[in-house]
Length: 138
Image (cartoon, rainbow, N blue to C red; front, side):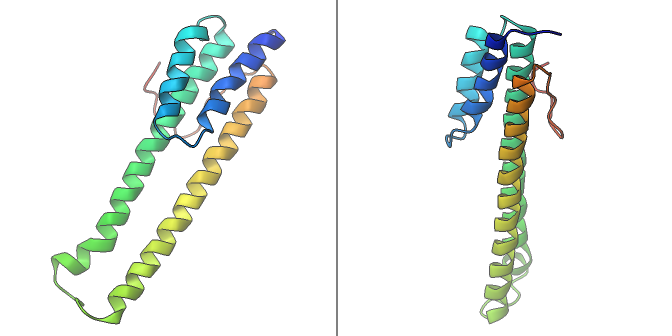
């Protein structure tokens, strides 16, 4: 479909909002933007809907990652009472922390890269569907 330059630029704005370092407020801001402008064009509606779904999925995956890290870091040693005062617990804690930090860096990099990709698709006037996204809004 042929979209106007205005529609293409307006479909980029939700992705810019999503890059703000304010975790839950940017979801609300994109939703408000969708209410105000989202029904004007199918391109804008597609990008706002998929952006909200992507952000909600990203935050859900982040919460799951933190829960897994908390379980892995605490479960075997505190529950079973093993290795309470040995240096191996400290080494294992550092290892789990480094692995968790690596996962967080990878997740942040993918988040930014996918948003940049979505901006490019919006400027080209193409629809977007983020990978591994749960469809909360249909």
